[in-house]
Length: 212
DNA sequence: GGCCAGGACACCA
DNA sequence: TGGTGTCATGGC
Image 1 (cartoon, rainbow, N blue to C red):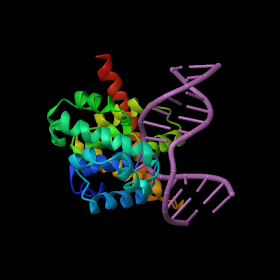
Image 2 (cartoon, helix red, strand yellow):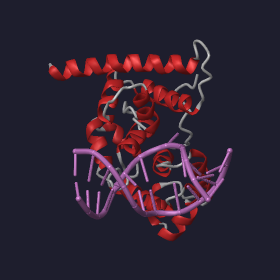
Image 3 (cartoon, rainbow, N blue to C red):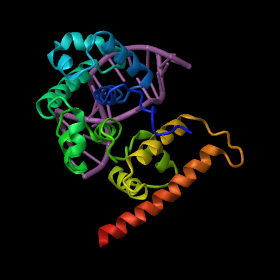
């Protein structure tokens, strides 16, 4: 239904990264306002963000909330992009996934979900994103799994396919926003049951591989 | 006015 | 290691 393209609306990989930081605990509609203001200020690139004074940046991203924290995080990421990646986000994609992930996690303000969002949607790497929707849904289905276990199980069952990871994550988020109408063969419930089934299979597979 | 939204981090026991 | 407080805005 949702496809793999366009679910994360961004014109450039760097814009994906900016959105990933701005959306931390924030409704996406507020993130869009902040991104539009950055675009209007011609600040949607690493060099502009790195050079901008903190107060100006704070005011530009104010609609997204947590503006002081997020301004600092954006500047840290912009400097990292310039100094470590030479201004080219796609350089992350040329690294092994674990190496790129560790590098991102070393940055202040980049946690596991934000790192995986950048790896998947900005770099096209097969990093399955475990977000609040995913953990809430699985908890309600009685599946008590650590985020790392969920990530590994889904990555395994999706054959480390970035396109599939993007499709499934987008679908989980979009379906989670909808309210189940409790009809027989409800599309939402069928989707969730099916995902849970494959997750269990993926989890079993991961454990077997780990044992080997 | 309260709750929620596509988290992360510092601090403390 | 796990729990808690903090950061802050806008829509409903």
